Every structure is written in structure tokens, then in C-alpha cells.
Image 1 (cartoon, each protein chain N blue to C red):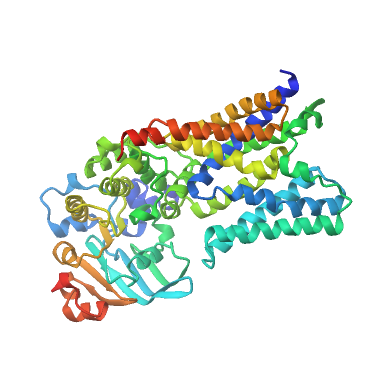
Image 2 (cartoon, rainbow over the protein chains, first blue to last red):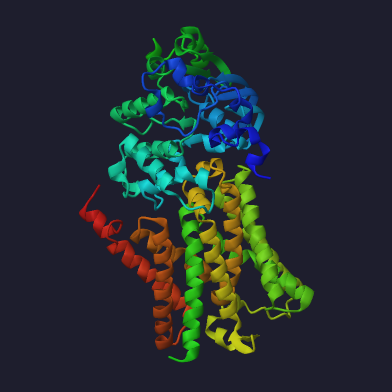
Length: 297
Length: 288
């Protein structure tokens, strides 16, 4: 039985619709691209980068009663939070607050996790291709024999699996992603010859090449100079305008207040979540940090 | 050169190829000492099979040895991931225990078994052409058949699992998230290493197994910038060392595996000094 035979009503629709048969029937042109409808951008059709309409009715990430521990030591307990889709969202908090643990646990990268995790309204295993992850810069083998373009090509692996060859379409995605973050000239350079900022651009390019609906970044700006940070933030903001959801673990509170749409403040559990101005208040910060950090005053 | 000499070089070359290919991944994953541990941990398997069947060099011996090799690598992996002990400590806890078990087994139950310690330590590559088996009506050296089968299997495995192996060695979290089953593939790699270490153990002995896995791969890393070329160059280094090592051994009338290990080491030192980008001289000339 083929997918088409199972959903005869959608058989002549495009593949993106066939994956969500329930919603496909009642979609009008506007309802299919709620992100653009809401932002009312002048030219929505050309700037779209990802491959399919993200499901904007569901939050990007929803955690219910999540707890996680490392080596028997509880790091997070009772985390209940919703991060909306299509916005630039930050996960902030003091060192050891469980910022990285929260996203890694939600991505199934931490062994002992309890609670419910929903990415784009679904369990992770059903949305793997639509979720891209940019690891902390020290989580990858920096002296690995691999070139920049090979790293970006890995972004197509979720779509092609173990064995299927990369197609011309894959090559296009890779080239476009490298162009977008400005690393086209570095394509054939081994990654151990790149600077921290160049390497971070390459890893963002890998996430872009995946054409995911949601990008999760763990401390993306730690080994990066100010100019690169501004450029990367610019790209991420652009992605959100196109309907992609971005969740970044970050520690620069001023940055979060100025540039992000949404923030989750953590200190072993959720202290506050919502618009940065409502979250990064002196009372909340004092509860999270013990005292308000300098940058927030 | 006699046909026996050619046979020895071919066996050593094939062994170098398969060991270098898997060894490349081990070196990059920081697991380079694993084959050394496996080649010691297999001893109780060999003893156990001897006690059960009275055979010292049957197919069952290989099976028994591999079983304990797998026990060693998976036990180590489990201990390491439990987070209780560090990675190298986990290895150091598991393999001496198994080796001791083997020694105990020999001295308690099989002291008359004549399990040849010399051949366990140095291997018997030199006499490999003499021990033959019948294959399609022809007498061929047993080691050649086993090594050839192992090499084809290893190369096929690496080709099929190329993406997950590459991704999981480079960026484990990505490999897991991309649905490439990185953790599982890591364990498949460990099992393959255990099996190949048993094959290598048979030819070159417990001590030199590690040389075949690690030295050509480390040499190749100095000379290449991408994974595919690295593994090909590693296999090439293995063949060069096999031929040169055999030549040296014959002219000095000494241990063949020993001279292969030594020439392998010489190649590494040359690469360390002279490699175009990563060698010591190149680095001194262009400090970064």
C-alpha cells in the first residue's frame, strides 16, 4: 500500500501536504503560511528558505514535567515550558542552571530523562529531519580529517540516510547554505585550519543545509568574535522571519533582551518564560542568579 | 623470493589493510588502545575452547576468542557510559581481569595443553604458508583465507556504514539526531575490531596487533586532510611496511612481524618529520 493510496484525497497535492493529511484539506493559501501572513512581509514567496510549511499551530518545543540528571546528580527538575514556533528564543541562566542539559535532554542526548517532550507538537523521532542541532564548539572532534563542505553535506544525511547518494538538489542546498553564512571560499579547507568563528559558521551552514523547521544551538557564540556573532544573529533573525523556529542556549542577557523574541530563564527549573522584557526582570534574575548580574542592571 | 615469501607479504598486507581501515576510526575516536586490550582479553576464550574440545586452532577457537573480545569491548563501553569510571580506566579494569582469567585457566586446568606462549605473543606469520586448508580442492594457507575474508568483510562494512561511522566519530550528537544510529554503529565498530583483533592475533601475536591498527592510521593522519584518503593512505602504509619489513626480516634472519612493526614505526617518524602541512618541519617553518 503506498502513501498515495492511503490518502487518496491528497494524492495530487505536494509532498509537504501529504505528510499532514489532516490539515491539508482545510488549508487556504494564507493559512498554509501563517508566519508570513502574520508578519505581512512584502515578498514572502522568494525569501522562504526551508522546504515545507512549518506547523505554526504547535509550539516549537513543549516540555511537561521534565527532569534530567547527570551521573545520578539531578540537574533539572519539574520543567514545564512552551517555546513558541517561528521566533528567536533564548535559554538563559547562570552556569550550572541546566541550560545545555535542557536542550540536550529534549533532544534525547542525555541518558536519564523523565517527562514529556514534544518538538513541533510531535515526539522527536517523528520530526528528526525537521530539527537541526548546532552543538557546543567543544563537543565535536576539531582535529577530525574533514573539510568544511563535507561538514555541510552532513546536513543532508537526515534526508538521505546511510546509503542514498546526494542528489543535485542536495548539492544546491549545501551551496546555498554555505553562501548564506559566507563560507563558500572555505569549502575545501580542513576544519582544523578554521578559526572558531569560521567553524561556527560552517556548523550553522550544516543546519541550514538540512532545511529544518527548527534549529537548536548550544552556546553558539562562545568561540566567536563580535562581528561573527552579529552576522550569525542576523541570519537567525532572518530565518525566523521565514517561519523557522530558533532556540539558542545563550549567556549574554543584554543580547537576549535586545535581539531575541522569547526567553526561558532557568535555574535548575524554569524561573520564568515569555517575552525577554518580562522574563529578565530584577526579581527573576535575583532568583536565578542569587543577585542581578551586571549586564542586566 | 619464494612463493612462501609472497604469501607472507600478501597475508601481512591484507591484515594491514583491514587493521588500518578500522584503526583509522579508532585513532580518531580516541580508542587506539582497544585492539591491545582485545588481543589480551581473548585468552580465556582460547582456553575455554581447548577445555571443551581439545582443539587449539580450530574455527571454534576463533569463535571463542571473538566472544571474549566482544565481551571486553562491550563491557568497557558499558562501564564507560555508566559514568562511574573514566574511559581508559574502564578498559584497564576489564581486559587484565579477562587475561588473568585465561592465565588462571591455563595453569589450573590446561598446564599440559602446550598453549604456546611464544606464538601467543609473537604470532606465527612466518609459518603461515605451512598450515594449509583445502579450499575448492586446492591447498591454501589457512591464514590467507581467514585474513582475506576478514579484509573483505571489514572493507564492505566500512563502505556500507560510511556515513554513520564518519558522523558518529566526528560529531556523536549529530549522528544520533540525524537518525544515523551513531551509538549503535559505535558498538558495531567495536565488535568488528574485536573480531579482527582475533584474526590479527593469530598471525602477529598479542603485542604487535596494536601496531597494525594504530601506526599506519596515525601516519596517514599526518599526510591527509580527509577521512577517505586517510584510510587509503593508511592501508598503503601497511603494504609498504609489510614488504619492507619482510625484506629486512629475511636479510637479518629475524621475526617478520617484528620488522613489519619496526618499518611501520619508521614510516611514522618520517611522516612526523616531513609531512607537508602537519609535519614538525612544516610547522616549524610556518608557525601559526
